[in-house]
Amino acid sequence: MLQVRAKFVCNGVQDNPQYENKSISFTPVINGSDENKSFSKYTPSGSVHLNISYETEAVNFFEEGKEYYLDFTKAE
Image (cartoon, rainbow, N blue to C red):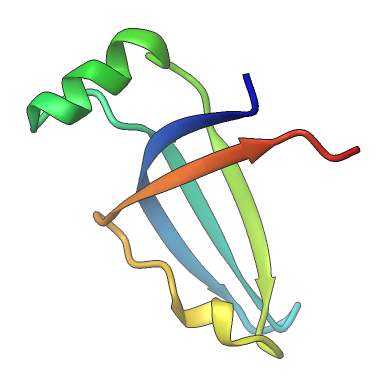
């Protein structure tokens, strides 16, 4: 297996001006579309938390309530 894909929903975007970043939190999708039901069968729990600097365009990419794919590829 070369890659693993998961599907997460953004649960929160918190602005942290004192640290010049935003904290973004995600949990696996658990309901909704047939695709989401398929993902939730195999990744029913977990979480991802990112702190993204104001200095990068990525700071505004994530939106609360939106779904995102998370791809894992082994670094060698």
